[in-house]
Length: 203
Image 1: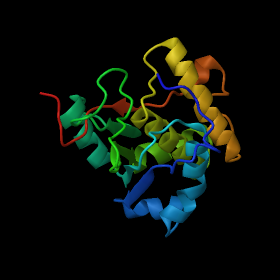
Image 2: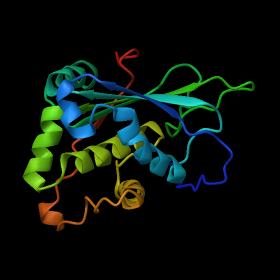
Image 3: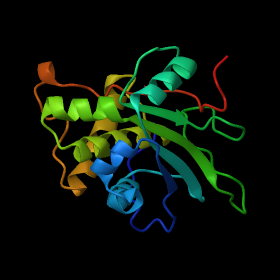
Image 4: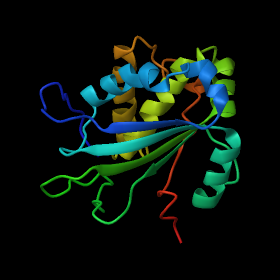
């Protein structure tokens, strides 16, 4: 599992995030310029999270439940919508050990970290249920999904604690309240899924 890093003096560029607003309803949450609205989030995330010492890219798709459900069914075998899906890149050159993104040879070419999809209906319904601003809940899901691309997971207690701790730190930098602060018996966990990239489905 990657360790938390402080990249303030790392001398590396954070990954370039390609944002696609696939469902126009997201405009009510992120505005007309999603790149500008989400820029502080990625700056805060990559100031704390480890990333490869080479140019890297990742994609964020603000989608709807229908697309996310289809991806979940095809690539995860689960015929249901979920709030966030992460597809870490698993192509040639990826480290097969702990799932950390690869470091490419010099001269470095962009490393594809993977894709994150977030479902509009599920996300906004969760925000309404929990009394959270939709944008703040979206920020949490983006951070959670991107950390999966960087090799983090929550398969056991220590790994989950490390991932949640980093999520809290990044959200705090953005002035967003701790999403895990509710009592344990009332806590609604991030209902995410992680799978292979759609271009490399599991057989």
